[in-house]
Amino acid sequence: MSESVPVRCPACRRAHVYAAPSYPCACGAPVTPPLDPHPAATAVTHRAWDEEWVAVRCPACDRVAQWPHPELGCPCGTVLRIPVAGGAAEPPDTTPPPARPAFQPVTIRTARDAVTAAALYLRWLGHRDVRRADRRPPSGIGLAARGMLAQVDPTVRPAEPRDVECLWLTAMAESAACVYFSLAGYTDEARARADTLRVPLFVLDLTGTPQPVNDHADALAAGTPRT
Image (tube, rainbow, N blue to C red; front, top):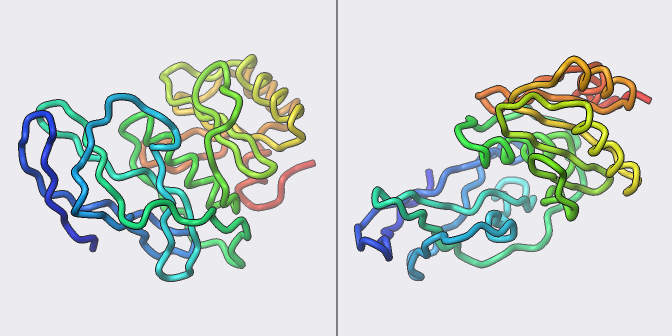
């Protein structure tokens, strides 16, 4: 269980007590970002991808991975970013674990949760260097890892053929594989186009567990991508 630290909102001066959430490492052990109680929490006034994640080392297997930066919502409406001790760690290990444990999902309540769930799943598949993609997709959020591009669509609109095609074209240009995660599913035409292009499709259920939609997704989840 993580330690609690005192936090004061810089906007309304209300005092809080905050404990960072734990996340499941690929080895199965819980990982908790270490909090620094000395610097003051800062208000989040704009979002930048590099500030949304923090590198944390697993105490059990020594693996470093990127996890969401601890944040707290104050009743006054201010979102507070909680300082983390030690600063950024070294880049995460890109070597996949010898045995894959059961996937540990995170409940999806927001669009950010959907992106986190997809990033966790990519790491579970063996991609340790998950980050935001350099090229922004036409819709949703792009994630990238070595040799892999992923698109996460957290909207209530089912993905269409153009969405699948744009992801596939971008991946082809970068000589990478690709995978699509959607919260609202796919149109029949999008599923047919994905089968033609061999793009794995997953639906994110509200538990945070990606569910395979086509055979290519089944094969990717099993560790035997179709050719």
